[in-house]
Image 1: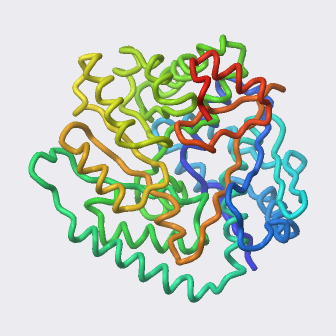
Image 2: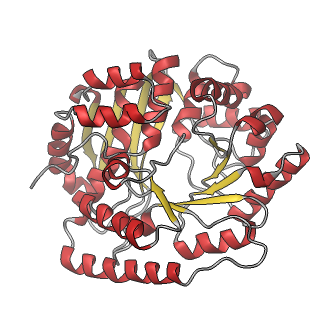
Length: 397
């Protein structure tokens, strides 16, 4: 069968935005990314090892093509020197290893961060597609199309209510969780053609280019986590990372991620300076309504009109949940909803909950203290305890 990944644009936009920022500021950083499956698959993922290695070999044989580089260069926040770097970039097979541990599949990418950080989304898309190839594809696609039509019907029936001054807008965030590459394209195309008033973009850079959509994304946890290992005082890592982002993008890509050490600790660092400079905030763990109310209260305390800001929700959403959250906040602030699994892997099969997280940088552990139990991924309990103590989160999980 053809390789799963056929273009190095077939990944999330925020991989490029974080990549550029780290290339410009800390290109010497060494990093380790670790794969993990958080739920029980229907067969041992270790059975995929040979296929995973074959796909990694193919991935490491890809290069950015001239038209792909031209597209990236057309994005005003992508700098010409970064495009020049990508022109000569290729993944190094020596920097990534897949193996097995009992029934579990193990994958680790380790080396210079600017050479290994982009593996993540490709690895997750590869594992997902290989896994779901072992199920009845035609039955899954038939069910997926039935559910897709139901979503489109729900969007046709959706309308603003009195007091909702901002539009309902959602985006595709489903590269890493997708049932298959071709299925993501079919889903995104359907939303673009049949619900353009609501569907406003995709995180998939390749699909954004091919379908004339806005590429969506700013930063992920790994960006701020890296700053835990860059020599700044640990208490100041969020502020340092946000300041570097401001200097890199000068007003573009202005949605900040809030849950690397929890919303409360984030807001203590998100002072008037950052609140004015960033366009808004992204939710990725914890109760979304409580999070949104905290964000609005923070803007109010800083005397910032929240109607000029945007709250982006992206934690395990489906369309009904997004619509419900919209009803809660649409009269007070701009909103946006990044939906992943429920758009690109809603085919009647149980999705994998797989991640590939930054676990170390410059030889020391890094971690996030999520607002949702069970999302922390760090094997160094001493560092976790220290991080909790520094940010007053002794009971965080």
